[in-house]
Length: 194
Image (cartoon, rainbow, N blue to C red):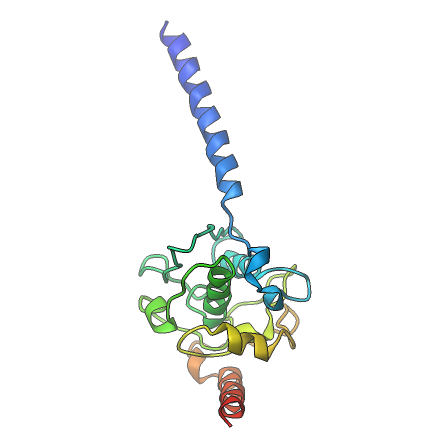
């Protein structure tokens, strides 16, 4: 009798894991076609949710999932426990906020998002861009809050790929590549204001 209950319990647990895995696969973030975010796709036709997933996986042993959200939700920043150099990059933040907006959800400011980060990486992604994806140019813009209009105007090119990724130092905000990207952002901002 105990063996039969044990066998039934194991079968039920296995079925539950299969069901949870199936539901989880359906709840992965992707852009709504009707949201008007075609401009945010990279040259590989990947939406910002997909590109952010690739980047998040770099610091998580190759595994990272961004859950789908609705119009009443938003992506908050990492906690002091979940913060890492991937999630504390403004490039990841921009892709994640574009992912939120293309699902017609709300966004949060960079300051609020990065409040638990011990080190922040502005305008750069601190690790190699993984093969299989490309980071659109607009994601490298530095700003206090993601702005879809500014991002769309900046465009996709040049993209960051594994071959073109800048290398950061242990003090990312003072690295030459970060300063260069910040100068480019300031020039773009001044052009927009004039």
